[in-house]
Amino acid sequence: MLEIDRHEDRPHFHDGASPPQDFLAAENVSLRLLLAQAEINAQELLDQAGIDARERAAADKLQKLILEELHHRIKNTLATVSAIASQSLRNVAGAEHAQHAIEGRLLALGRAHDLLLQARWSSADLSKIVRGATEAFDDPDAAKFSIVGPDIRIASGAVIAIAMTLNELCTNTTKFGALSLPSGRVDIAWAVDDAGQRLRLTWTERNGPAVQPPARQSFGTRLIETLGRQLKGNVRLTYEPTGFVYALDVPLASLMPATAE
Image (tube, rainbow, N blue to C red; front, side, top):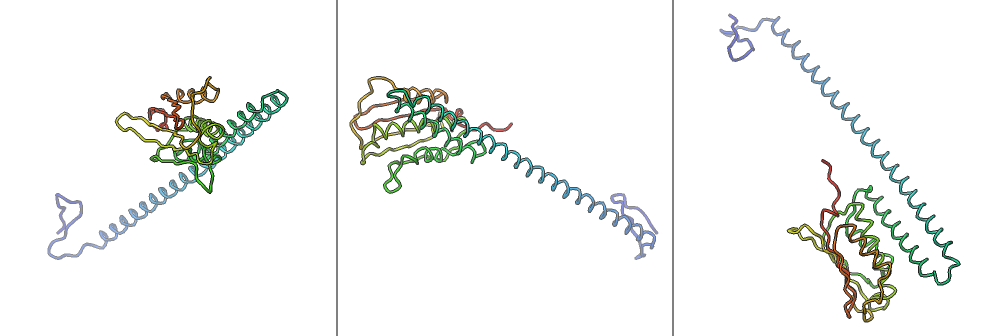
């Protein structure tokens, strides 16, 4: 006798009776249909995953191509500006210093753009920014810089400001500061104040010539202060007799890359 259990849709057979052949055949057909549908669904998911992966790969390649082309055009523009400045100042009496200063700043800007290209123009690590900016002024045989600080990602706009600031500091110390003497050294350190959500970076020169405050504010000094204000930070320049000190106190919000919503 065949009856249906109230809690299940599957039929039960009493007295050890075997299920009829037509019922088994129906069950086999149903099972085959379920397996076939499962295979179709799985294949659709795999196909869709493959399409998504190909689309992401194509988008990444396109983005890389656009960034490389943008970088190439920026570097060409910087080279053109450098050539124009050099030619314009070539016959101006006493303009050699200005010419070298402009060329140095454009080179620093180019190095910052190189770093941003490596990071896909999104952000870069502060340690890499510092090391990249100081590398050209360092001595591989006897390190002139001590660089200490935690890992922190910096947004692209802040990368330019910090790299340009460090280039000004490096240029100044090489000509007039600690690195103008063989014994001179520069300590660069930064720390994050989690409570106040601020970054504090210091540049401290030592073992150089005696320091005196300048009689007038140079363009480089104004540039450093302007770049600090651009990051909504506070810049302090201290002319200690033992060495020049630059201090930047800036909110983390001005440095951090924007997060996607």
